[in-house]
Image 1 (tube, rainbow, N blue to C red):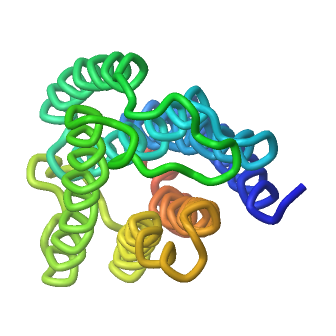
Image 2: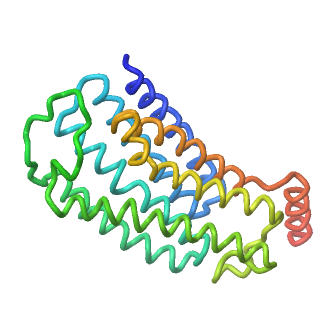
Length: 252
């Protein structure tokens, strides 16, 4: 197994494990942003698996379409949906999700049936979307990776600024309670950093090649993102006890 294939395998296993963990939190708490993050991490796992498969067996049109769809078009928008839920509340989040479901379906159809400029990828080197696809798939990728990443990064920075000024991080969730300003700032910083890492494959590609750059940024970016999710989701023990006592008091 080559180093690129090993990195792809590691990214697949890590993303899948994180997706299962986040999905378990969604099952227990039913918070919509956990559901969005779970699906996004599953898409990261699918994209990483396509990279692993292609590096181990050679690139084909099928493996590249799956990699392009899950790893460049769909994963970051669903990650950004979690930010929308946290900042704008369930109503705006639900509307955004309905639009995202529709656009995701259109993107799947466009990428899977889009004509290509070449039918033979040569087997070994990762092709570039700009050299293989026409306009439509590349537009979906640009919006998915660019605009959605901007939503995550700007949302994280904006939320940090609001909390450090003593205000609530969300616009519409007046009841959302922040137990620690430092914890909130750390979680948002990690999520923004993970998004930047995932967007940094183009910078690394000049030194390492497309395959190695994508493999490294996928693995590192997923780990950093999930670290941010953990910090955001886990309350300190004192806060958990206080919340439990409050709940018991209300029940009585």
